[in-house]
Image 1 (cartoon, rainbow, N blue to C red):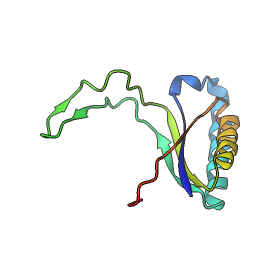
Image 2 (tube, rainbow, N blue to C red; image 1 turned 120 degrees about the horizontal axis):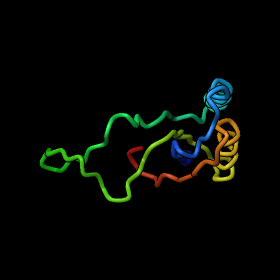
Image 3 (spheres, rainbow, N blue to C red; image 1 turned 90 degrees about the horizontal axis):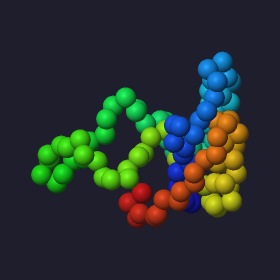
Image 4 (tube, one colour; image 1 turned 90 degrees about the vertical axis):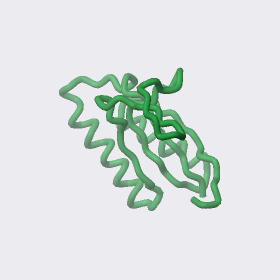
Length: 112
């Protein structure tokens, strides 16, 4: 089976404050469905109030991250047998979150 990253940048989720409880409940319902189906690996959101840093091989830490690196928002990692199934889960998450989702496939690593 293959692991897939389903994600969205925080600015893609444009939801009125009064609708957030319903969005949260709907998103949690999809995650619970994925857990029940045995395909959920992990998920969450990037803590955007904590600045990312770049850590070098010598252990030095710099606030200068890679140009173009803008990882933020929410994500879910699922492990499913086909890309078609990953697309269906991404569709369910898009409905729940009220925004389109990006789908990426992880490359296989023998230690995983």
